[in-house]
Image (cartoon, rainbow, N blue to C red; front, side, top):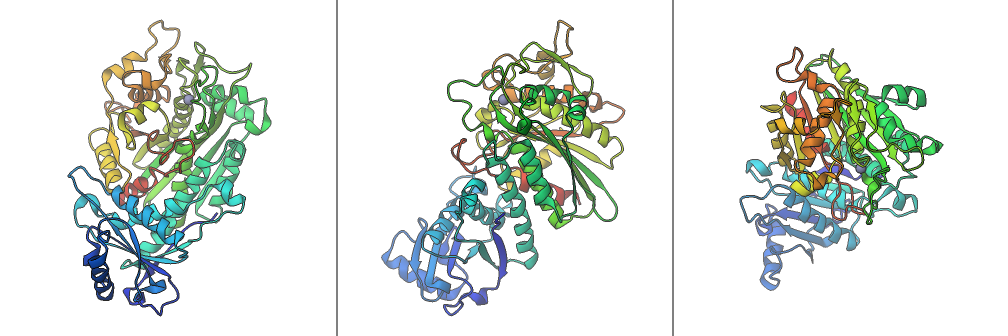
Length: 510
Ligand SMILES: [Zn+2]
C-alpha cells in the first residue's frame, strides 16, 4: 500500500539550494502576508503584474524557494456558515498543480486560523492533498502511481507529522477497502486485506469464516447473504478487531461497520441503473478498519476499541430472502422484512447485538455503527453525515461527537430519534416484533434514516438499554451515505469519513 508520508520541515529549508524539496505551496486567506520574507517579497512583485495572485491557485517561478516552484492557494471564507473543509478544497487544487508541474517532494505551509471552527486547518489541508493523490487499488495494481509520495510540512512538530502519517495510513486503507470493485474486494478478500494491513500493529484480528457459525450467530446478516452462499468466493465473513491499550482502560469504544460488498437490492432489485456504484456499500466497514489501523499505529492510552465488520453480498437468486419473511435476529427479536434493499440495518443489528453483550463487562462503553445506510441521509444532509443517537447518547455525547466532526473537516448533522420512529416500524399484526423497513426505498419514506436507526436499536436488543434501563448503553449510529464518496458516487474517491472524527473524539476522551 502506498501512503503519502508527512514530514516535519523547518523554515530554514526555504532556500533555492535545498535539493530535498522541489516546490512550496502556501495555503492562506492572504498569501501575500506569508511570514517568510524572501517569499513575501517575490509574491508582492508577482502580484504587481498578475492579478490572480491571492485570488486563485497559481503556480509561479520563484528563484528563492526549493525547485523554484511557488504555488499560492488562497482560502476564501466569505460567510459565517463556512467550515474547515474549504482548506481541503484549495489544497487539492494546489497539490494537483504541483504534481502536474513535475514536483515530486513539495513543501506546504498552512496559515494558523485561530477561529475555533478552523483550528484543524493544517490537518484538513494535508488530508486534502492525500485524498487528491490517492489512486484506486486497481489503478496501482495496473502500474499507475502518484508522482508525489512525500509532503513536507513547515512549522509543525515531529509528533504532528507522525500522527498525520498514521491517520493517512488508516484513511488510505479505508479508501482501498471501500473503493475497490466487488470481486477484487469480495468478503474473503476484504478480510484478508484487513489481516495483511493490520499485521504488525497492536490490533488483534479474527475472521469468522465458518458458515454454520455465521448462520447461527449472525442470522439477519446471513439472510442478506443467503443467495450468495452457493458461490464460495461470495460467502460472508465477520471480521473482529480489538485494540487493548497498555495500562488502565478508562473507556471502551465498540463499533460495528456495514460491509455490503455489493448491493443488488436483492429480490427488491435496484432498477433504472441504481445498482451501479453499489460496490461502495462497504464504506462503513472500510472506515472502521482504517480507524483500527490508525489506532494500532498510534497506540493511544486509556481507550480499548472493539470492532465487528459484517462483510456480505446482497445477491439475487432463487434462494434470495424476500419481503414478508420473518427472521429472528441474534438478539431474539422477530424481524419482518419490508424491502430486501434495506439490508444494511439487518447486518448492523446482528453485529451490535454481539457488541451489546461485550459492552456489559466493558469499562465506560460507548457503541457506534457506521454505514452507508440510507439514501435518505444523503438526500437530507448532502455531504454531511448523520449522527443518530439513542436516548442515552442524546443529551451530551452526540452533541460532542457532532461538534468534533465539524472541526475535523468531516461535517455532521445531529439527527435525534422520536417516538414515532419506533411506532411506525412496529408490526401491529404481532406476527413479528418489528418491520425492517417500509416497502419503499428510504428516500421515499418520511424520516427514512431515523426509522432505520430505530430498527437497529430495536433488533439489536439495545432498546433494552435505554436511558431508564438498569444498564443504560450509549449508542450512536453514523449514516455516512452522503459523505463516504467525494464527487461521483460511482467512481469518485472514498473520503474515509468519519475516521478523523473518531480519532479526535478519542483524543477528547483521554
Ligand atoms: Zn440496499
